[in-house]
Each structure stands twice: as structure tokens, then as C-alpha cells.
Length: 283
Image (cartoon, rainbow, N blue to C red; front, side, top):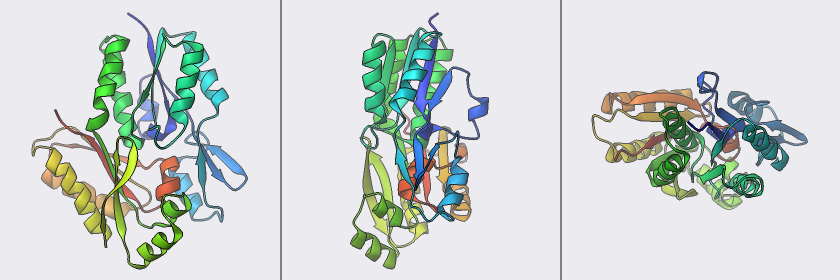
């Protein structure tokens, strides 16, 4: 049976699970930048520490894709041990990470390295990594795994409501004026991801209404006996996170609710106080 590795990026890390995951999953970090300081996501700056630093550092954080040399080093090392490498990575609409992986795959071993643009991020990316891992463990062929990952793209849902618009504005997603008036009016945009792009589903006045919008989409797409995984992510918003989990537990009691701290790279744009959910639509 062929030996297959998974190489992905750190935006899909679920920090509570990483030490217990399969040994054939490897990560390349994106970078978090505060002023002149640069940190490798997760390895040098955990997500919880990132949100704490946002409250104490006067510099607005930025992010950058993994160093090409680091990706190449990881791929070359894995090629020495594994027959194939599958690389599900962050949406190409949000980062140059996919293009860097793809270019290196073509250069090093296009017949052995398969790069998948998941069109997703954070917990959404985790679903792709998890599916690939399960199929590898079951003895699936590499071509079959890649085909399944490609068909998953429209089924993976990621939604988030942000507490304030300043981080989105500073990240270049909206104008300064829109952020000012949005904050003044307490507008809470509900964001979701369509074909890898960030779109606004709805603009509401309170966080509870934003959460209700997200939850209604989840309920509309799942049966009452839904027993799949749903991630509830947050960036330092324990109260609203607890509310979301209680609501899901009451309406989808068989769902497997998992906690996660929203990736620091995603937090660069969403900021502290965000709450999100992610799931895979059933067949």
C-alpha cells in the first residue's frame, strides 16, 4: 500500500487536537506580523496569545503566506519518506499560499504531489484534512482521495460574525467611512464564504441577531437528527460562544459540537470578539 502524507497550512489547525492527530499530517506556518516582529502561526504564536497581544500591542497585526523555502524544504523531506503528498490548503482567494504550493509541486514532483485549493479556511480547511486522513487510513488510492476532496468544496460551510469593523477596515476589506458608520450604528455583518471568497450574508444590529442568522442557515441545511461535526469558533467571546453551543445542543442534540479558537491569521482580519460556525452539508 502506498505511503501518503498530508501537508497543509496552519490556518486549519485545531489546537486541542493537533497533538493527538495522525503522525502523517504535517503543517507549514503562515506568519503573523506586529510592527517589526514576525511570528510563525501556532509554532511561535498560539491563537489565544495572538488575541491577547492584539489588546496590548500598539501595532495592528498583519499576516503573510508561508516562506516558499520552508514549503520546499517540507515537501523535499516528505518525498524522501512518502510515495505521495496531498496538500489541502487555504483558499487561493484569500492568500498566495495555494499558488506557492502548486508551483513547487510542479517543480519538484507533479506526479507525486497533489495540491487542493479547498476554497475554505480555519475549521473548513480541517474538514478536508480530516477526510483525507480518514481515507488514507482506510487504504484509499491517492487519486480517489483527491477526487473526494474536490467534490467537498461546495459542501463545506464557514460563517462568522465580527464584533467590530475596524479589523476588516484595516485589513483593506471595507472603507474607513463604512467602518466608522458601521461601528456607530452597531452593525454586525454576517460573513460567509462562497467559492473561497468572503461575502456578506446579512447586516444586523446586534450580535445575537447575527448569531441567529448563522444558526438558521445551519438548521436549514441539516436535519433534526444531524450527527455530524459542527465547529463553534471564537476569538475571545466566551459568552456568545456559550449561547451558540446551547442553541445548537437544544436544536440538533446529536450534533458533535467542537470548540476552536479562530486562527490568528483569520483573526488579523476579523479581530477579537468574533464568533463563527463551520460544518459540512449532509448528502
